[in-house]
Length: 237
Image (cartoon, rainbow, N blue to C red; front, side, top):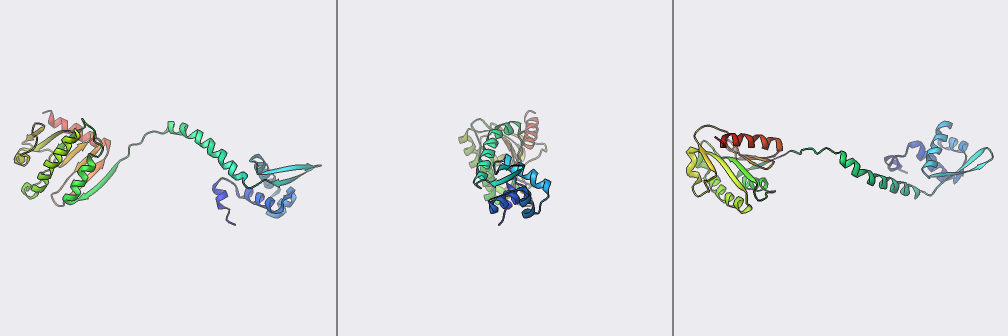
């Protein structure tokens, strides 16, 4: 019989041996249990006391000797129920001691279809009034990626429908790519800053498409806040 489950529940090997021995014999004294289990005298007596305390073994006294009996195995379920009740009462206290841990996450998307998926994952938790900050999508040959700029126009409309406030920084030499978009919250600059980075809540989106059409979506409060601070250092100039 596989008794490993009893060990998983916290019973020692000696408790299992003695309890099963008593179940098989119906009753018996310590000397019988020593012979049947091969355990030392001190171990048998100590283990019997534990089993008695847990309600799995009872005894009657005959003169100077005790005769032990195994209780119904269903008693084990009662013990588990009591432990579960105690644990249920303890859990709220344990939760109070739990320190919140920031969970970071990163996803990789490929191609234009991947970029579209990433953008909507990016604003999945959007609420009216949230800020969407971006350093524009930019490559050495912008005309090779007109479909990306066209898609950002559609994405801008969806952000507006969500009530998201957008602010962006873009190079002066690609201003024509923003024709048809809301330009009141976009500043065009003629000095170098990092491009292809967007920040929304605790998310950062990176689109380094020069050598490969790949998009990174990173969830990190610390990283998002650092880029947000940097964005406003440029914006406020």
